[in-house]
Amino acid sequence: VEIKSVIREMLKIMIKNQGMGISAPQLGVLKRIIAINTKSGPEVFINPKICKMSKEAEITEEGCLSVPGLRLKIKRAKEVEIETLDETGERVQNRAEGILARAFQHEIDHLNGILFIDRISFWQRLKIRKKLRELEENRNAAY
Image 1 (spheres, rainbow, N blue to C red):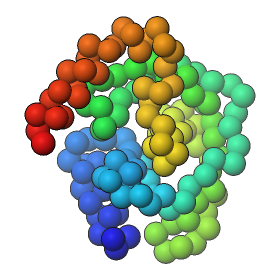
Image 2 (image 1 turned 180 degrees about the vertical axis):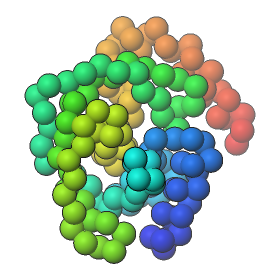
Image 3 (image 1 turned 60 degrees about the vertical axis):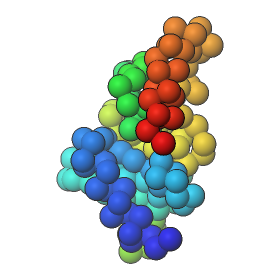
């Protein structure tokens, strides 16, 4: 799979669905690529990794393009430092806070096989199990 076509498809899906971010694994592509809608527009990050996380965290509601219609309160670090490659292969370091830091953590979780529902407690999961079942049934019906 050509990286540029994967990136184009990621951006197209993210923008169409008004998402904050998207990862290549969400498209079934096992590449370490994420796209995030930053203040300056959509940006692509290749092989991103979190180098540093603030000890200070916040609990805020977030959603996910992989689980449409579900919003959950997730605890995440307020600030992160990221090391990544840009689209040209140049090594870049980024510092992010607030919603942008949350987006980096959420999308990098996807690269590591973690969904935001994996970050909630057993009791929270019990509360949303009906909604998760409905989403699964709808997805199965679509295929």
